[in-house]
Every structure is written in structure tokens, then in C-alpha cells.
Image 1 (cartoon, rainbow, N blue to C red):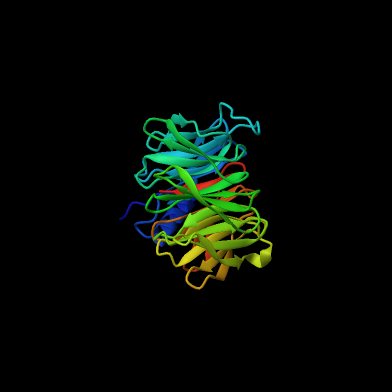
Image 2: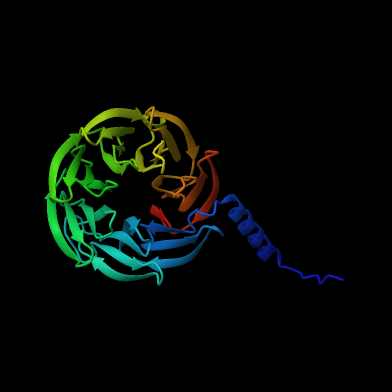
Length: 332
């Protein structure tokens, strides 16, 4: 006669939920998400199979932008103190060892770094210094500042091209994008875009770049070779206040977080038009995509959670509570 084991209902429910989540997820989907919580000054570590926070890393300052190194062994987090227009001791890019979940280095990156980009070889980063109107180029191996570049007024978003040759730095107050030649360590062009540009992202082939405009309510499409805007796409009735931008791995879609409406717009990158939207949490800000493009993750600042979106069905399939005022998300 088979042995009967009584399993507590809570454990049974968790096991069933975990099995269901694993069944939905392709084998190459990410297993871990990292979320910066600006309000609680922490980074949440989420196990995506069980869809729950498994660790919390104290940062000691306001964490916002974050990126994983190309090999996935390091997590870099932009930190700022509470003193505007002054470079303080907490203004830095923190380097976290993913295996130990400990801060192993702090890279000085100018005043009030908010967003940054890492080169494809993992050797350097470029950070926007919001207070100073500059961008700092940092050698990660030596922790040496290679250059400080004058960009637009109140720089915000940073994107590095897939080949590592260019960086785009958006500037909220001057409504501009500065194009940085990474080898020359120089700004080589400036483009005007819509009002209050926030985030930027390149297509996988590097031929296009996409810039969100929070006040304009649009997405600007930039031809990288020609260094000019070729389209401006209206999002969410111009009421969405878009911020975060990510491009699908095949380059066919662009996803934009609309903080004011709690929706993510889906843009056909070939036709340059909106083809759908999906409701997520309150004030979605940062976005991240799985490597296969199947899963989209949004950090929702006012509902204090992360939404998981099935990009095939265009619907939210889960919400994970994290810390206070989540800002950005990265997946591995």
C-alpha cells in the first residue's frame, strides 16, 4: 500500500505555483531578477521560478540605474546621496559580486549618477551626471576616470551601442541627445528630440536608437549612421509620461514604460507604430527583457512591485512585491 504523506497547504500551494511558473518558462529564460528600490535604499534579488524575493542587499544610498556585466558575474548600481549639485561620498557606481551578493567596489562617477551604460567588453562604463551636466567615462579595472565630457543640461539616460563605438546620453532640460565617440572620448554630435528625454536604447544591429520623451509623451526613432531623428511616435494618447525603453532581441519590437498610465506600449520597430499595450503596476519605470524576448519585467514605483509580462500574449502573468519605490530592473 503506498505511503500517504500529508503536505501543509501553504507548502503545497507554493510547490504548485513554482511548478506552474517553471512550466510556463522556456529553459533559456532568466532565473534571477535584480531590482533597485529607491525608497528603501536596497536591491531586491528575485528568484523568478518561485516569483519571490530571496535576498535584499542594503546599498546605503539611493539606488537607481543598474546593469549586469556581460558575463553576469557583477551587478553595477548607480547610487546618489541626498545633496543636489554636490558630489558627495555616496555618489558612485557600486559593484556587486553576484555570487556573494556583496559590494566589492565603488566607482567614482561624478555628481549624482542616475543611469549609465557598460561597454560590450565589460571594461568601462559611461555615467550621466545629472547635477553637473557631464558624462563620466570610467575604467572598471583600474577604477580610473578616463574622461569627463560636457553633454546636455540635466543628463539622464545612457545607452552604449552593441559594437561599443558610441554612447547616447539624453538630457532632460535641453531636450537633446549627445553622441559620444567612445574611442575618441569626445562628444561628436548633439540632436534635438521631444520634450524631456529620459531613456535610450539601441536596436540589436545598432542601426537605430530609441529615446523616450516624458513630457512630450513620445518615442523618437534615430538613424544612428545619419545621426538624425527619422520618426516621432505618439504613445498612450500623449498622456503616458514614458520613461523606460527596451528593444526585443530580434529588433522587431520596442517596449516603452508609461509611468502615468501604468501601461507598457508595444511598438512595431519596422513600421514605427504602436501595435498594442499591456497594463502593469503603478508608475512603471525601468524595463528588462529575457534573452529570448518572451518575458518582459517592469519595476513599478508606486505599487512597489515588479510585473511579469508574457510578450506573446501581451498580458501580465505575475506581480512580485519588492522594496519601496522600485526604480530599475535587470535579469540574468
